Image 1: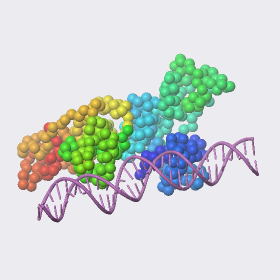
Image 2: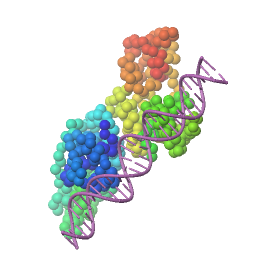
Image 3: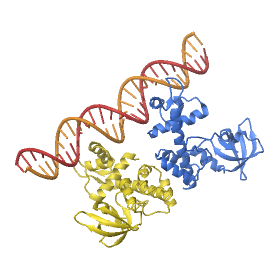
Length: 215
Length: 215
DNA sequence: TAATATTGTTAGACCAATCTAACAAAAATA
DNA sequence: TATTTTTGTTAGATTGGTCTAACAATATTA
């Protein structure tokens, strides 16, 4: 059985490789709040356990078993987030931290029962797809708010960044899951967009709009 | 913050001292599935952290902070058991093992929300009292099936032993929480009791009857 | 291409939690 | 009381996960 630490490395690898396809020791170290040397040691252990491919100075990639384990952890994380949000009335920005702990509970039965209790949800409270029990994950091709033309209205379905600070800002602007957003104007030079949510206007950065997924 | 291991030592100490008031290194080691030497090391650490009183070759006892921490873990354990039993349809004998993991999740908010979600239960699925958020535990003076006179009928309210093997046997005999039991006869010499549950007769040992709490 | 900067690796150390093997104290018993 | 058994302690080793400091490989740029 994998340790919590090992599970966290696999999860981070899964997320980083699925958006960039080239992950380095430094980057991994930064996301795990650990030093590159520590990552290096762990990569050797994960290779030893046949969870990843890795050669000195070469590129890092998950292999079958590692990928499966990563998806299992992500499944658990997202199901717990859904539970916290829907049943225990946690807010959008609070669920992540607790789910980081709950995702490491080992009990296949627990997770299947939880899935059923939640009525087999397809997405978590941030709009991210929940892998099924076979470790299959629906590929989501999603547009961001940055791609919406001026004057158009759209609906928020997910956020890219799950950090509490970002989510709290999102809430402050008046947004929640399924909120409607109208793009009022956009200043290309300043990379700034004016939006309207429930009659409330706000000015947001390019970074912000790139972190909002819309339908 | 305490480690899971430290929490487990405190919990075991709480349980052992509350039924015997004299706990030794060996006994503690046996319940924690660890060697006496390991316990000895840990006792020093717990003393260092001001969680227990302990002198070389002397007796071991929890002090204020340690007791509080132990009760917090027990509270979490029993709330999670209640959740698993009532919401996720786990059986009596399955809840313990998973709760052993869940009890170590750190999040005061989570546990208060869970308590509310479960409608502030007073006892867990084994009939044990759940400590409140201030760490207060109702003292339960409970009679066992061994003390019930021949011919009398009583109601099961809890079990002393929470091991899966015992609970599975309990279920096999036809018992569940709140089941009614009639004591048909008792052989003092053989220390055997004949009981009847829902019309089904069974012969059980003294050990068995001493592990069944009744109203 | 040589110098510099970035990125990755290794060696050696530390801490928590465990072990085994040897030893010491206390309790039970002959 | 002397011997034996039980119980508890210590010393030294191991493992996983981390660190710092030094070094090596690769990439960038003057």
